[in-house]
Image (tube, rainbow, N blue to C red; front, side, top):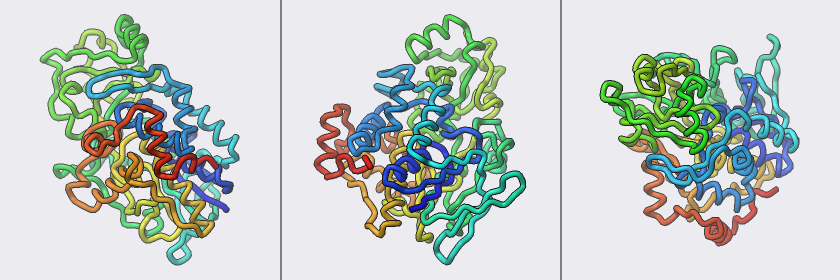
Length: 424
């Protein structure tokens, strides 16, 4: 059984791990020199309904990556506007830990392995093609998983955003995102809201050393600092453009909200540097990601694949998807949940077994099905979905799916018959 996964973010890593645990030979291609993609600058998990989803996956036997996050956590049980019991992992430490786990499980990692094309055999992908040292390299497989994300290349940030802001995706160094599904002939869809295509990443990172030491001490101790903005520094209108609508709250417009993820994570899509530096404590502020965080941020949700609830991509018989390719799902937890299911179902596909559909009586199963239905409507494509806030967290609470007692969550999973299903 050979499975090829294109894209090494959280979704790709989860898919690779799930498939390897089921005995497949797995090759994971990542165009950059590190895994995790936006997970290298993210760091927030277990906030609000993400706690429920993580514990569901742990009960299903797919919790290794969450345990790694827990092991790298700088803070737990952090509260900030609109969010409870968040954990914050250290973005500087997480990637090697994940990489080592995948290597231990026998995953073949190809870093700086940017896919450029595919070879088709009717409705099936026969191989993906990449270039290394100017040579054409062909990698065949039985089933493929697209976790290439929906951000970049720079042309999209130029067309739909404020230009390339030099973010962690580093398209200029490693080449822009190439969609496996699009290369296979799939007509992908983009999120649209108020005439705007896509959505802008919702946070920036500042060098701690550039901030006032008193502010940094509080940030390191508490994990969160909320700094009221003076009237002359208020900038209205940024909330609507955020990919992370769970943070589209007035508190994030009227204050600077900082989280400690190793960097000082600034919860706003961008903030003009000259205005930022008039805020007490930020007089010497400098951006870490994106480097041009005073001007803009990366544009996401420009390339999502139509798929079913097993995460099989429509129109290609041996292609699955996960993460932002599977719809306007926002966050590391969401990527791990969909990645785990995609990798697991890729193995079942090779074996000729029916795909696993996670029941809608779980938060994970309901989110996968609900977002798929929403993608079929114009209104649904204008929204963003996450376990941690906005539209979907409200739905979780209305359906009684939000739960913070691990024992109760494990009992729920056991009642579906999925206890330990992803164990291996």
